[in-house]
Length: 123
Image 1 (cartoon, rainbow, N blue to C red):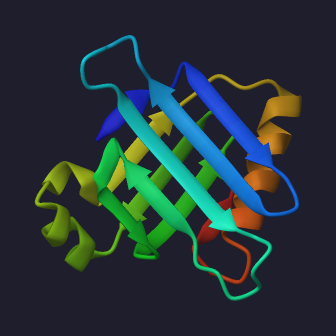
Image 2: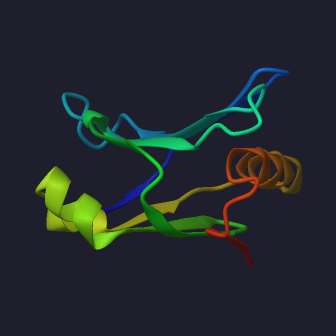
């Protein structure tokens, strides 16, 4: 699955870190969405992610999350792709346009969400 995000919404407070990428324009009835979150107030919490909606969501289950200045590439574990029943979800690529400040916020938010997990790669 590939899409270009026109909406990027990072948010972090003392309790939770969230990051959303969305493309509501290409298909308004079924927008492409990739979101991540983690309850950072609990030391042993797991990261959570959704692809498009809650039926394609999981706590954990990612092989890798690679982020660069204008792209996010996420690879799911095979058993999760089979559970979701959609081969397109094996690799999710999101292109986005972010200035230096927004990119820094994206990276910091991802670091909080994936703290303690070895899946995040920053290029």
